[in-house]
Structures are given as structure tokens and as C-alpha cells.
Length: 348
Image 1 (cartoon, helix red, strand yellow):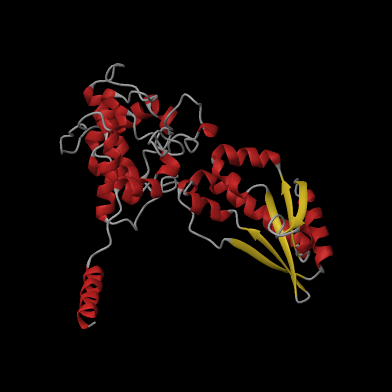
Image 2 (image 1 turned 135 degrees about the vertical axis):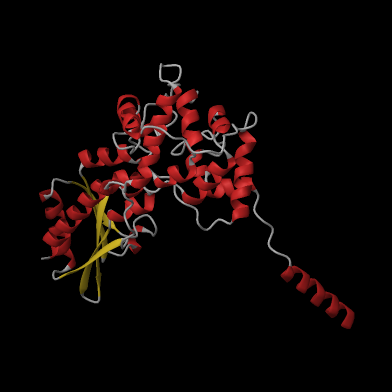
């Protein structure tokens, strides 16, 4: 009995002293990356990682930095919680789609004429990458881009991109283009190597310019709006409907909060949701980021408890910070103001 107990103690201590087995690159990719980049790396919201020219052109350091820092305000999130070993495993897994060794960039900065680079950038690059390097519009999924376009032009003024991309990386893209994407070789289209160097220097100068306010990621805010109603539940519901219609929304339906979760006779009639929609706003939001469909149509919930009524609504401002999509900022701010207007009209 003593020996069995001793052996059990030894085994328990060995297990406690052994670190948990690290997740494989595939497991980490499926957990953190596949939802956007596709389980086979073929792309979706995120860029296709299997494109031969992508694999050829990006270095391991570029991948590591991109995973760690993301692209603030451009859908690709940062992953500060991953360990360095996790990121190494992810990079190895992504490299499993490679068709050969990646390009080996010279480790030296590029010099050039920033003023001339700005002029060339406006002439050759701004149409796709934006006047201020803000990148193409859309998230990259087929709803927000032509189906034959696998990649939305990246934001060149993004701090995550500028941290990950070396001067030589940017130069190589301009010199050789990217097969399978709209990025052409500007060397083959008449620009000299010095012209290209000048553009690189101009793009690098974005590091010294703060992101425009509309591109800056929104700080996280409260997820819900909560108001007290001075009216009884039925009057509050009636007021919400009238206020929604008064703000150019179409009523869709009203139902109990637990509809579909319990048998109809067991539904709590003191907890009700009013659904409504402005289809112009809906289409605009979906074109910017189809993921907002998870939170549509618009809804406001009224709950009566102990004779008091509270009104709840999701805070649309939270979406921009949640989805890391700065293009949503203006629309989400407008929607937050509309929700406030509807609720204030219903409860004042």
C-alpha cells in the first residue's frame, strides 16, 4: 500500500512538473486564423495565404510581426496573447503552403526623393491604395469586392504594415508586382529603379504622419445602452415602435426575449424585443463589413421587473472596436446616435 501511494505521488509530481503540450501550428491556425483566411488558407475576409507570390514575397519576420501586431483598424487583429513559440508554430504551418524558398531581401534602408515619390505615388498608386495610403475599401470577402479580386489593396499608412514591411519588401512589390493580384510590375511599366526608390521613401514617410481620425481604431466602449422607462411595459413598447418609425425605420416584428428557446406558453411576456430596419443603412453596413449581419436587424429590448421597466440596446460603436474595422466608425457613430434618439423619444 505504501509503495503504491509513493508511486502515485511520484507520478503526480512528474505530471505537475511537465509543461502542457504546446499546440501544433495547425491547431493554432484553426483556432485563430481559419475563420478569416480559410481552413485551407485560400482566403475569405483575410488574404489568401496560399497564393504563390504571397508565399514567395513575405519573410518569416513579416509574418511574425503581422500576427503579433495585426493591422489596426483594418480587420486583421493583433494577437498579443500568443507566445513567441505559438507564433513560430503558426509561421511554420503557413509555410507549409509554400512552393519554394521566400525571397531574401537585402537588409538595408532605401534612400530617395520623397517629394518626387509623392508625385509618382499619386499618379500610380493612389487609385488602389488611397490618396493617403488608407488602402482599398471593403473587408476582402466577396460581398465587398469583385469576385475576381482576391486581395483588397492594403493600407500602406497602417502602423502594423509599416512595422512588418521593410523598405526592400515594398520595393520588390513595386519592381515585380504580385501575380494573382491587381498589383503590377511598375519596372515593366516604365518606372526606373530610382523612381521606385522614391515611392518607397514616400510610403515610409507615412510612419511620421498620424492616422486620420476616421481611420483610427475606436476605443472599446460599453457593449449595451441601458435606460429606465417611466412608463409601463406596453406603453414603452408602443413608444419604441413609434420612435423607430419616426427615425425612418421599418418595423419588422415584436417577440418575447425567450422566443424559440421555450415552449410558447412558457414565454416571458415581461421581456420583449422590437425588431426594425432601415434597408439603405443595412446595405451600406453589409457592404462595408458583412459580419455586421450578425447584429442585424436593429433591435431594442424592454424588460419589466418588479414593476419597473428598463430598455436595452446594443451599442453600435462597439462594433468598430470588436471587428477592428475603421471603415465602420462613421456608420457606427451614426447608428449609436439613432439608437439614442429612438430610446430617448420612447422614454422621455
